Length: 216
Picture 1 (tube, rainbow, N blue to C red):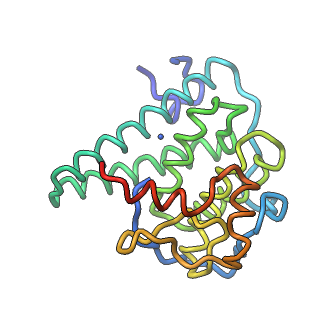
Picture 2 (cartoon, rainbow, N blue to C red):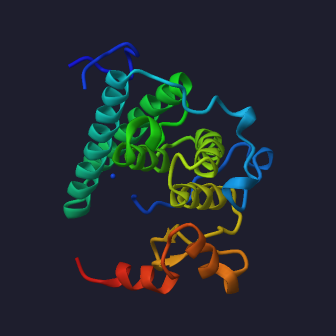
């Protein structure tokens, strides 16, 4: 099958909890508190119109890559080995390069471009991308897409929190967990956290924490 990421004219038709990475130029990208606060003009263009066949090919590519990521992580969780960790790292790197190509050519692959399931797959790939600067650029694009109604606000919540933790800043929505404690990394204004979570379609934090503690 032709690869729509490497061939934009092709017609062929869901995060790991990780330690925060260091951000190379964090101060140049202040974290927006909501989609309306982001300014994506200096990132790349919003989603551009593509043919239905190409949109379907992009969606299939994103779903395939996210599925491979999930399977590798499932295998590593069941029986961790150095080789499986290396395979995950290669998968994350290759997926991020493919997503960056899509974003450069077509803008952020939001639900209006590739459909809800593939847009969620794109978010998963982004959250696992090894380059903080790429996540920051896409954060602003996702903020604009959420403000325009082209993707769920909860997508912005996840990437905004991910970037905030990368930058050593308190997160807004409490979505990124410390794997050592299964508690959120520091959150700004904790007393109004659940209100912000409700605004983007997330349940109360305690519900999320109870789910994390359930066996299996």
